[in-house]
Image 1 (cartoon, rainbow, N blue to C red):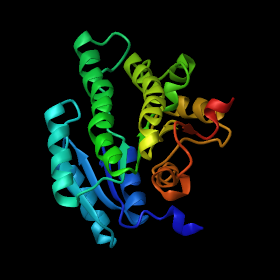
Image 2: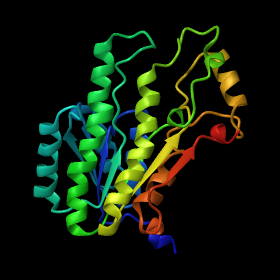
Image 3: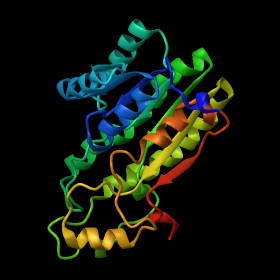
Length: 257
């Protein structure tokens, strides 16, 4: 049974692999046996993560990806296919956060849309094409519980955090339904598409915020870099072959209240 959870020899691309969630995801996916490709705008950061993984005895490669550029996406697809010849898994974890609050300039909204809206769509379109042609594959989208609920202003009172910007809620909510769309379109060709919606990630937030936030979860804490990997490996593996079009909250019970 446990062999079904293995990613041995699967070619998996993880975008945004050097960020808060990305570093933990990269280590877990590689440790499950994948031949991992980590891609983001900063190749040096990706290579540092890949180097750590290789030191632990697993396989990891670094690549450049500007998700706001279709040419960059197509270039990465070409390099992956030249090197590996197939694509078994895609983890859409890359995200841009140019908006800093509800009143940010329109330019910040448009930049966000280019990466988090159009870019995510193009990743499904161009890498999904590889998978449909080979008749198998799994796309895992890293959403957010903020795509499932509205903001809670009370969490931010008496802190310097400010209210969260609207673009994140818009894109992560859209990602859930984009997941359902491509699950429907790609399902007949053996390609599965699922979404994970993590809760808040602990990053030394102010004490008032932390105290309020943990009270909103069943498990009484924020997430960390080991909380998401198990679900991602599950969705990438053969253990989830009959699961597609789903959104799984990984939020300590926050959205279940």
